[in-house]
Every structure is written in C-alpha cells, then in structure tokens.
Image 1 (tube, rainbow, N blue to C red):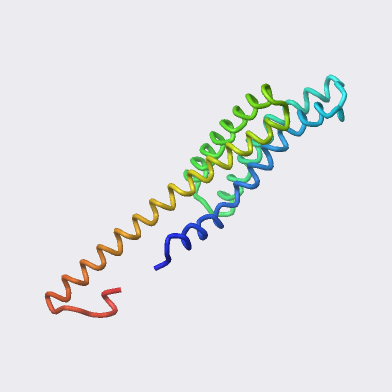
Image 2 (cartoon, rainbow, N blue to C red):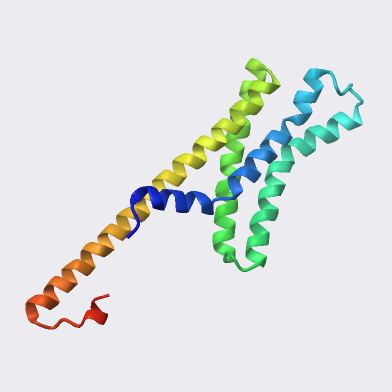
Length: 163
C-alpha cells in the first residue's frame, strides 16, 4: 500500500488540464496587457475581435479538450460534461477575480490574480479528492483485515482467497 505522499504525487500527475486552462486564461488577458503597454493602438474592429476572443478562448479550449477525451474514449459523455462544467466554473471564477484585479491594479495584476485563483481552486480540489481516496482505501483495508480475522477464527483460511 502506497503512503499518502506517494498517492498525492500520483494524482497530481494525472491532472494535466490545469496548465492548459491557466495558459488560456493568461492568453485571454494578453490583449489587455498589450494595450496597456502601448503595443496595440485602438483600431476599432481589431479591438472588438480581440476582446471577444479573449473572453471566449478559455471556454473554447475547455470544451475542445473535454470533447476530445470523450471522442478518444478516455471518458464517458456524462463524466466529460460534468468535468467541462466544473472546469468552466473554475475558469469563470478566476476570470471574474482577474477582471476585478485588472480594474484595481492593471492588466498584469489581473493576469496574476486570475491564474492564482485558478491554481488555488485546482490545488484545493486535488487535496480534498486525495483525502477521500485515501479514506476509501483505508476503509477497504480495514474490511479486508476484518474478513481475514473472521476466517482465521473459523479455521477457514485460504491464502489466495484472502487477497
């Protein structure tokens, strides 16, 4: 049986979507950063296209990545839909905090706040789910130990069946 830290490392490796989501949130603020730095001038149509793309980009990336997992058979449709909704909710919350930070401290503060909130939510979920998994495994081991103890008391002990 693996210890708690080994399980934490194992489940952290499984979550590869966090980086993609954080990059897409950062790119959605790229327009604001470039405008603040004076790299883009107000060109009317271009500004509106970048504003729209910046808002839609993270949600489009989430929808495409979750649908690809369903198409490739890594997830069933119900799980994919639930995971996409949860990821979109986290991203929406992060973008809301980022927008507020942008108003208060500028675009750089907005990017930092959005990515920080997204990372915080991912870390919280990962740790809470790992604790649940460890608890379930511990309960399963206790049940197996009790089953083996009862078999020993009855004198019916078959080593392969004990596993």
